[in-house]
Image 1 (cartoon, rainbow, N blue to C red):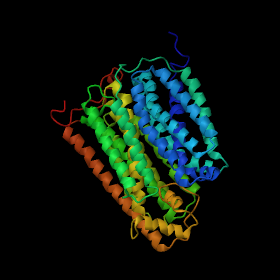
Image 2: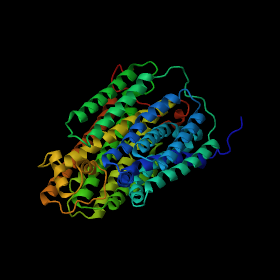
Image 3: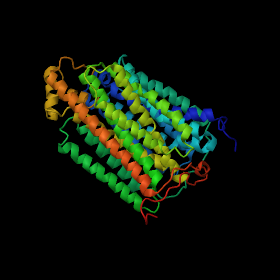
Image 4: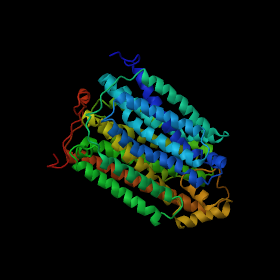
Length: 525
């Protein structure tokens, strides 16, 4: 069979991965900053526009699960091309959307596409070029999955400053999608499905969708209700119960879609835990920094976005560091190093003062981003190296579900702490209402992390002091939790008796296990 013209070109395959994954993640991160212009253009309440990134990110979480199942039954190139065509169609619809519901629908489809790409895009690049290119592939993965998304705030803030700038965002993504479609057709060879069978793991798919929708609806309800209101805690309780049920069912299944049984071993568990925890911790830290810059220092949206976008430097610094050690005995220890940096950055957040120089806040952003860069994607890759090759796509799907939910579940905690001292949560919100000509939902939207182009100048000192104390509390809690996470990782190493050894990378390409590790408990076999 004739091979596509770029099948043997590593740069072409690497560019395909970047074009497939990065634009959607970038636009998804940018959406939080184009709320104002979308709401104004459609005459909609900001709280309704909040569903755009919420449902988009929810679709990422369960989209990976659906993709992992389809990969067991559908030829890989067909699945890839079909996913890209759906992505392009959704961008066309988003570019010409005429109301908020239509835009929400397109974002949900785009989220599904992003979830698919997380599972199906990296596989051909890793499997097709073997051990020699693995370090470069890991660097590209960190840059594509984390680095580009870090530019989302500045891209969104810039788009919000241009009339209908959000439409240009989707138009550019559409053009990049067309480039990716052409490149995929001329690059990808045909590959059989992964261990094709007639069995479809419907329990895993249904539970993944249900738990994601319930958890994300609970967080969305936090926009309009007290955090202890049934509209918030009931879906969150049911959603997390569904997540537990998903783990139990998959652990007992003879042919599971999700490799939860692999988490009984040290390296997969360390990688998964570090990836998921760091995702949640980093999301909460970013929210806390944005809250500080907006409410304490009264920075405008573009400044806040620019500060947060310095995270891309930390991500790009993490990429070559991990690429250098991924094939050595120190690769797995990057998860621990990243957690330590996250702890340092969180502790630094407890020292924020109202007159803190902007460059000092940027320094904290860089520390946190470097920690996340050494933890999130490296944690995912540590799990991938710790399982058999045919489990890799499914392991990525599992972590995509867990890390996306962790990011959304922990992010709002920063705002709870930041508005808690001396005031009940909604009482603090109502204080805002007396200083701005804005409705309650709009104010809650600001506190949840969105922006409306309003700087809180002139707030009473007692309110600012309460918020600053709450920010310190939030970062202190985050630092303590990160310290606990470090202890857990060390205990897993100690309890399993595993020693740091260089991975046998060649085993990864023959459906073996590159990072062998014993089960954590006797009888786990």
